[in-house]
Amino acid sequence: MINRELIRIKVVQLVYAYYQNEGKTMETAEKEFVHSLDKAYELYHTLLLLMLAINHMATRMVEMEQSKARRLHWDKEIPTKFIENQFIAQLKANKQLQAFAKRNGNLWDDEEELLRNLYKQITQQEIYLEYISTPARSYEEDRTLWRNIYRALLCNNDQLDEVLEDQSLYWNDDKVVIDTFVLKTIRRFEPENGADQELLPEYRSDEDLRFAMTLFRTAIDGKETFRQLIAEQTRNWDLERIATMDLLIMQIALAEITACPEIPLSVSINEYVELAKLYSTPRSGSYINGMLDTIAKRLISEGRLDK
Image 1 (cartoon, helix red, strand yellow):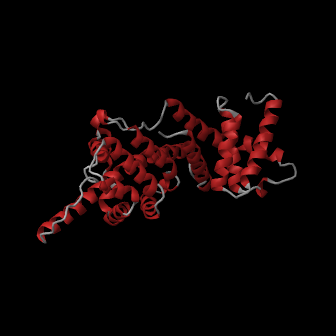
Image 2 (cartoon, rainbow, N blue to C red):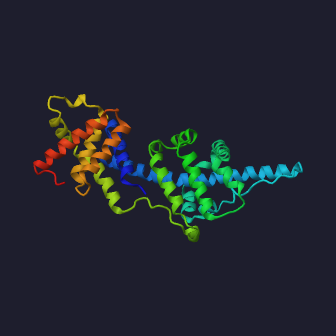
Image 3 (spheres, rainbow, N blue to C red):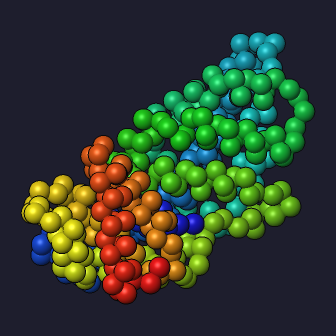
């Protein structure tokens, strides 16, 4: 599940943190790096549990409406289709998710206000109103509803983001990427798999974990070499005149370019240009693109890089 896009983000964050704390050892930095990746996987499970928490809140609200209707003798039918969603029932029974909740607890148990607000927002959505207006039920319809709800309300929700940020500083930049994995997971669920439906693994392969550790170590260990390459390319410029994040991103990019020959040069450069847009100045992308391209061509011409 943790892909190379997220790994690169984490390397930028944790290498920056390493330099901010001069007393930190490489061993400590590596442990923190691995911990940050584990936290991303924890966020994945936490967001899956959020859907169950919303459904639990919805169930409570519907039961309160039913009780009120009986007490006041209202001739009013309270729709239960949403809380009887078949996809949610399967997710609730999922063995892997249950095991995670048992080990780690459930963040959402203490977030009643957020859950009430999210449920209220859902009931105001056209997709919800259309869904409960038809008596017909199917697993496909139930699964599609939650994919649409997640995309419309949970991918970009300021109140939700604030709660997650309070829980973990690591999650601040993770959620955009993890949201894509949650949506992928919803799409992959099949009713015949029941409680044994597999969630996404933490790493797609051992190769991705090796890539993560290689990139992190090389970026730090090769600092002087990579910054010398950058300094040589800047001619009369002092490195101190380069924006701190630009310099750091180019350092990490050169670590990937030199230590991971199997990754095409254009892929590496494009990935770090995008990171520059996220973490540095508006002009950084084009500057970093030109610098990395020129340095790489020079290394290739000198026989120091095989790409």
